[in-house]
Amino acid sequence: MNTLVYSIEQTENPETLYINLTNSCTNNCIFCLRTQKDDVCGKEMWLENENFSLEDIIEQFKQFPTPKSVCFCGYGEPMLRLELLKAFAKYLKGNYPEIFIRVNTNGHANAIHKRNVLPELKGLVDEFSVSLNGSDENEYIKLSKPRIQNAYGEVKKFIKNASEEGFSVVATVVTGFISNTPDIEKCKKIAEDLGAKFRARDFIPNGY
Image (cartoon, rainbow, N blue to C red; front, top):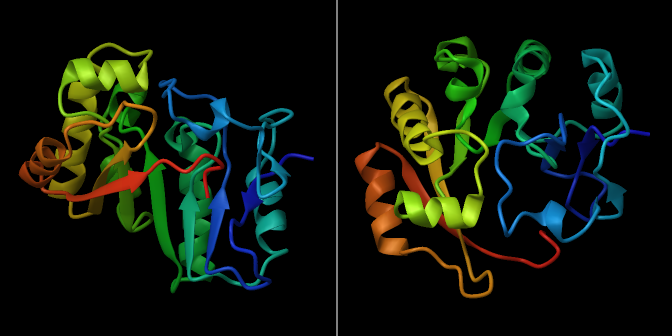
């Protein structure tokens, strides 16, 4: 069965639930968990297919106690499934308005969909965590191995646009993966100049 909703907390009442919408991604980051293992906390993360519906996500979501937050984050880029993401976020806001909704994204959505999708997500998403990954284009390409043109520029534009649209935005980098740690201070300044908060997160071999 497809794992669409999962938790990384070893408790019956997790504070955060994660939504796994797709295995497709426009990056192939060298530190991505999916290159290291096939599961998260024993849950198989590779989807058998992507023909599932909003109702399938809701069914799995209801198997858990109501969490404090929901994060769209799985083994792919959730914004590739934009309409499904919007539909589930709308369901959550309509039925559980107290839940905080975050999207972990590579920041390629506007390039992928060839439009600014951020206005469509107002009132549905509370925060974007965006993978900045590098302090310049060459560093970004080395770490992220993007499959789209001008990927680093698109990431920075997305962070800036999301900040200007009033979303909470956190730009992130991964540290401690072999010798490939980006220039943290330069990344922090880039994030702040774009109007975002900044977080450097340590690489964890099993991801959690």
